[in-house]
Amino acid sequence: MHLAWLELREFRNHEHTRCGDMPDAMIAVVGPNGHGKTNLLEGMNMLYALSSPRSATTEPIVRRDAEIAYARGEFAGRDGRTLVEVEVRRKGANRVQVDRSPVRRKRDVRANVRVVLFGPFDLPIVIGDPAKRRAFVDEVVVALHPARDQLSTAYDRVVRQRNRLLKEWDGTGAPAGLDAWDQQLVAAGVALIGARQHAVDAVAAESATAFEALGGGDLLVGYLPNVPSSGDVEAAFTAALAERRTDELTRRACLVGPHRDDLRLDVREMGARGTGSHGETWATALSLRLGSASAIEATIGEPPVLLLDDPFSALDPSRRDRLASHLVGRGGQVVVTVADEADVPAGAAAVWDVAGGRVSEREAA
Image (tube, rainbow, N blue to C red; front, top):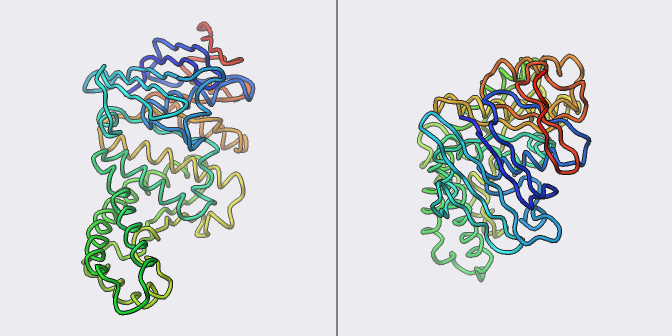
């Protein structure tokens, strides 16, 4: 699939930007830092994610002196075209329409749209705490199967309720209702564990292939579940809860379950988090996103839109060349931003210049 056209209004520093007739191939976006390249990609990603990876609230997205920002675009895929329109309010909930009909659930957008975004904000997946890696895995779960978008939230809801019960317990006898919450925790947890294992299995080999293509050597990606993800997971989860019951009552917190999962990332048999250079950390995070895109393509039968924000900046010249060749050779629509004219891939089908929140397309040579 590819994004056929895009329109942004009052979106960050883009007062009004329209990009029409976008090719289903590589597009290079060139311009100085701070002029709106990342904002342009964020607008494209908004049509899928309906949120920003750069800010927890919508207020920074709306251009100064405006109250509402708009992102509109039409995706063309194997099964037809899908129009997505997002109204981002400075305060209050966003409004979303798909093919002119209001929708409230993200899955209603993602049923026909797939976008993968990479940027510097992805580095915490590699070097941050386990919560960042769990969030990445859950993103892959939803990208592969949008109907599974409630698994993590349903599980987190049970954890919060169970933790509240433990914190409010008076310390005498057994907490009333704990067994019932145990059953709900196991049921929600087993579903989430299975989905995460499937997602990691789907992305692991693809990410390793991408990392090798960048000249990085071997990358091992593996799921590190807090509860064993093979065999009788329900029985293992129940047994683990029984084993940690005393500790949980002492600490008054849930100590067992997928909220304590992690993702294994080893570069040349060493943990990427603590031993990798900045370039290796960057290449690892980038490879995870490239691997996600490949896993999505294998699942839905067509490549997602791939958005790469300044991917060459932390790579040495050899890896830059390898990445450019890899991107051109993978096919599908790839939008890549670069600050340096020398980094424009030779195989780019279109080159756009960005300056002061304005986009202009270069004429074909």
